[in-house]
Length: 300
Image (cartoon, rainbow, N blue to C red; front, top):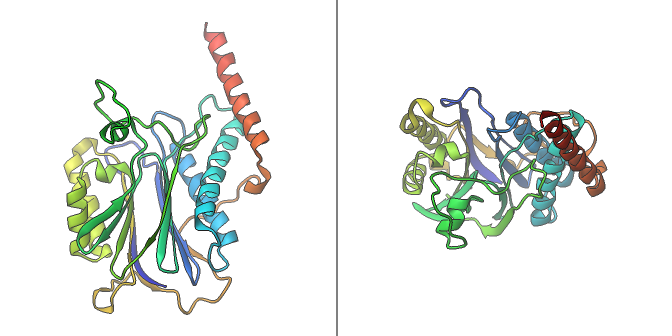
């Protein structure tokens, strides 16, 4: 494989940056992941980090050197990340669970497959045009799609995420066959909340990812002003031509079987994700709900 990649995360006008992103790869496969910890709930940055670590750990186990079934892998990895967040909240006795969005893509062979939950987005740009992008799991996005009609909505409200006591809703898309020069961008809502799709596509098409991504982030922060959201982006260009290759160009041809490279911070999970079955998750959710009930009873 040959691709160029660039990632950056900047804190906007928020107290802290709860976004997390990273990528990892073997000789014949790559994984790109981004999570946006949700405000209004505790420890969003923990939820985002747990999501990245869980998906990355499972990828390291499965990619030998490719993932046999990327669709199944992405769906199961997302659910495993959700389970890890629920267990973390249960073990800490939290009255509310940490929550996060997630978007992740596996690129191998000549195609890409991705999963997303929430409103962190993935864009695919080809020859200066938007080939496709994810559909947000928000009421506004669903309203615009003609699925439901709600009145007096003035902001995006997510109806699903990782870490909620309810089972997450998610979409798996692909495979999409890639062509040389295709660009894939994963971003938090801090980017698309300030820049529209046309602006994102135009800037991404005009430059290498190592030049386009910093400019996109700077423009989003500038437009967002002092109350700007955090802005996080990881983008790659597939089979980057030699004449347009950035210093972030990666060729995996020389990587040996069994070798795994990653920018995602390693973390030791308390228990291996395989050990957490659905019954354990249900017990964790029940414990959280019982703690909330007892707390409400004490306040009454």
